[in-house]
Length: 401
Image (cartoon, rainbow, N blue to C red; front, side, top):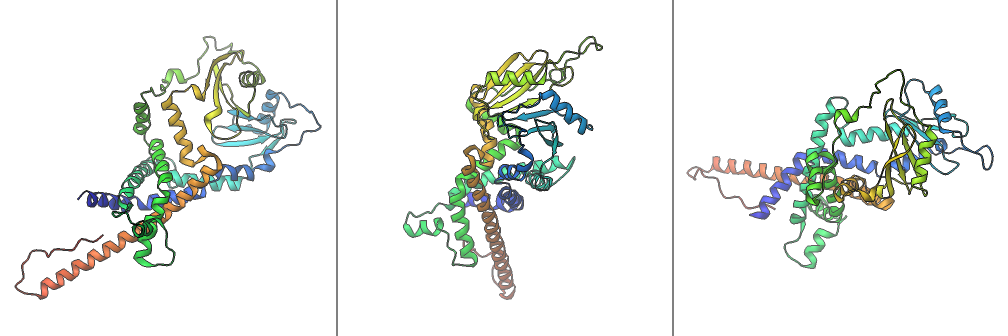
């Protein structure tokens, strides 16, 4: 009875959420090495040639002034620098635009490979919101969140269903080893079990992290289970920049280079620094500093400095965060596999491809079951109609697996 109940939960969840899971899985495969693809596509924009050996970069404010002269429609919000003299500065204008800038001349080299960027961005939008725009994204986000939860449920119930009842070599081989010679229902059953079991650990983590990303309550549950406090949400008054009493005398702002010097002093072995440019009237600004040039947050820290004199206000390395916050951040990178570097990305990509097979074979098995049930019902109705005198009660149907 328990196994039958779990089976129907698994079947119903798979049928209802199958198409959405299929879309998320296909787009997940396409996004497997997104960061590496973007870096490779932008290599000509991100690489500069110093005018001569030992050449010094321009002062950051001079670089930003040159950028503002070219990109006058919006104000830059952040800039990322690296110690390699052949690396361009990366200047961002919120989420709308990113440009690469020559730190020796201030020349804007361009936005990068726009075609690759737009293609991958569209894939991300389909992965998260089915490509929806504006207010429709809220509905799409609710659907993907629910299907992420269903996918998580499928991984749990799937393990119970796929595990052989009899512990024999033949039984384990039937569900653990994919058979590429058989066809039809036997093939769907074998592939659904084999791909499911081998991909299960990765899919469990991907779906679990997806649930935490999708739902606030799931993120809060991480803090509850670890006995830690979630980060405090800033109030509107705290979020807004402070307004000086005398608007005719704006707050002084230290040179941008001094903010970078504060980060270099705090983290001498830095791999990149991202400076969030101070907002007008703000008393502090933040910098992100990493000791490794990758997206993994383990060696990343956040500095808060005074905008008037670049004095350190607060330094928060990743290791100083409570365990709940660390797990919450790690789950973001576990979802893409980047928590384990390129090898983790490969595993996530292969598991996403396996999920495509799972959805396809699962829906195929469900369709075969429905057709068999419908045919049996029609045969029963035909037999009852052509056999007078029999009981009106439904004949017993043999259990189908």
